[in-house]
Length: 394
Image 1 (spheres, rainbow, N blue to C red):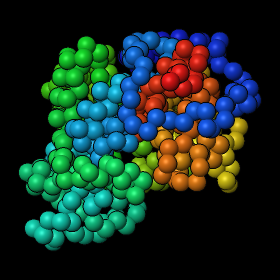
Image 2 (image 1 turned 45 degrees about the vertical axis):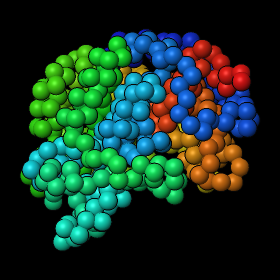
Image 3 (image 1 turned 60 degrees about the vertical axis):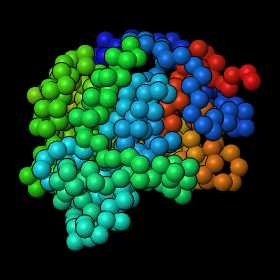
Image 4 (image 1 turned 135 degrees about the vertical axis):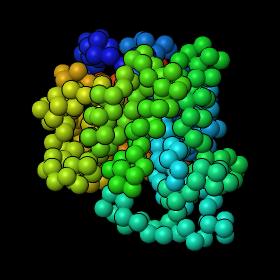
């Protein structure tokens, strides 16, 4: 799949022809118990071509983070095996300017750094994007030092099964992630996309560790700085990816939070918020430099005070009209992450009716999803495209 404006128009036409009205879509969602998500990775449907406009794309959020500690090569490998179209590394910098894959630059919840007495003196408090954060930070470690650490499950209470992998996997570099994607593409015969997110770019600029230059160098070195390279560079900030768009040939994805504003806007005193950015005018501005909109899914379908879904907003239609694809985040199978409409039973960590949620969101015309469980997302996308979003017969 190559992100292009023509693909947006093809998909928009298809969805306008096939999508139910909002009210009908919401009313046709089956009871939660009839669409329970699979408990383990289970690829039951064949992957569609990236170039096919008839199913939403699946981005393996931090790899297959529902099944392995996030941002490890093993998590990305599993996402590929489960059929993800893209894998998504969040990028932060080491002390010596090497990009590594971590959800945040503070690593106390994603590595075993606290168990390393040799790094006890690195424990500190910093202000990141206006927020005081205490812990250990990647920018205080060389790559060689970071490689002595091991990844751990970030949500052990939610995903205790993943803790059996604690201590087994290293922190990967971005170049290792790119090498994995390229080699997997050659091995499988299908292109594995990469969607790197630059984390806290204003902060890293402020300490002399800009993320964009090493990101572009890594893409060039891997032969991926080209229009059909299946790369989507993301950011919650704006100025850095606008600059990156001018300097590169890859796809650009503008992330949108459910509240607040891009930190570069806050830092520079610009009054615009994420809410302003998803107005028709704001979306036309984004379309000048980006190809894809990546909103929090609550921006597309808000929830009430009890977490039940409300009526969809106009953001998907407005984004398509501006020439943008729409790929919201983050879809997860556990009850606590699902709208109340699709929770099953009282255990917040049990699997709920993820397929019911996918059906509603596919029904408003989204083009792809960020998913912790890529197999669930892919099955839902393929069943949706086939017109039968339901569990296969046993």
